[in-house]
Length: 225
Ligand SMILES: N[C@@H](CCC(=O)N[C@@H](CS)C(=O)NCC(=O)O)C(=O)O
Image 1 (cartoon, helix red, strand yellow):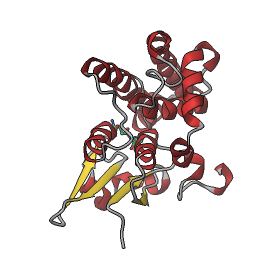
Image 2 (cartoon, rainbow, N blue to C red; image 1 turned 135 degrees about the vertical axis):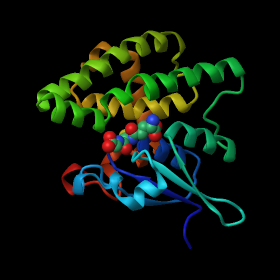
Image 3 (cartoon, helix red, strand yellow; image 1 turned 30 degrees about the vertical axis):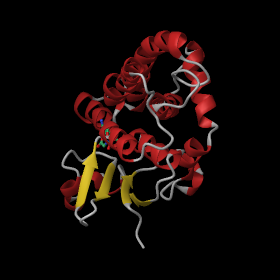
Image 4 (cartoon, rainbow, N blue to C red; image 1 turned 120 degrees about the vertical axis):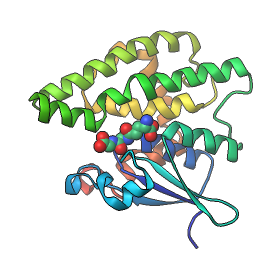
């Protein structure tokens, strides 16, 4: 029997990593459908995938309604908010409205002010239209991640506990752990961001985060396992 959710994911996609973590955190069954962002010129551009997600981005979560109708949800934060509402067990947002907004502030720092600037399509454009080599595009990504982490570090210095917002895991951790994974890929100087590094390491130890890690997905190449 197929699972109630169908996740379209790429092992190294940080936005997919966020959603995988939420699914494991809440113990929700899902089928994994790999979409390779680099093979064949990018499988996200295939007609089949574009029909699910016209933005040609990962992740997409296909949800089956009680009447059997399937709905494709895109944008990882919209998916996380949906999962939080549909599966309130093991909540990932605090109860207090002001605290919920503060967690969402952290979510949006990663979602809107960091990740889009180092997305694959941006790096491809810099390489193909503006002549940057690999060192150039890596430097670009490093710059924007470190710029964003400067602000995030200052905020976390006030609000972090064991995890990004106090002592409970929240959506902020689901955003920060994959962004720190990307920061390492681009050789960011993480020693400058001790609170971010500390909370990402603490959350990264937890079972859901381990299971969602890029090194252990069905489409992870053997050499990266
Ligand atoms: N804001 C979107 C971002 C999605 C996104 O950028 N996905 C990346 C992988 S992490 C992607 O599919 N990139 C495809 C490309 O750049 O061609 C979300 O949160 O879902």
